Image (cartoon, rainbow, N blue to C red; front, side, top):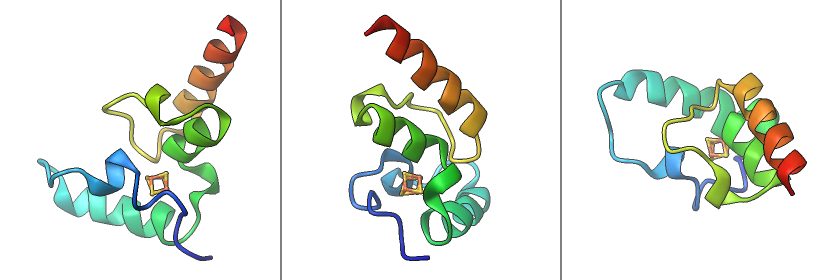
Length: 76
Ligand code: SF4
């Protein structure tokens, strides 16, 4: 699959390396460069927008992302 279309704007993809740079690289490989459809950030951005993405959420937290989208949509 092609790279995720949000790579240039994504806070996770563009953050400074933290305590787990190796883990971040694995997540980027699996989600950003392979399959973004299950990425937590992608799920929130496509359903809502970047302003609703929690600062600490990781691509592999898709279940949390779906809960955030459901709850925020109920508030609309
Ligand atoms: S796959 Fe997820 S983490 Fe990667 S660039 Fe897209 S939205 Fe960001």
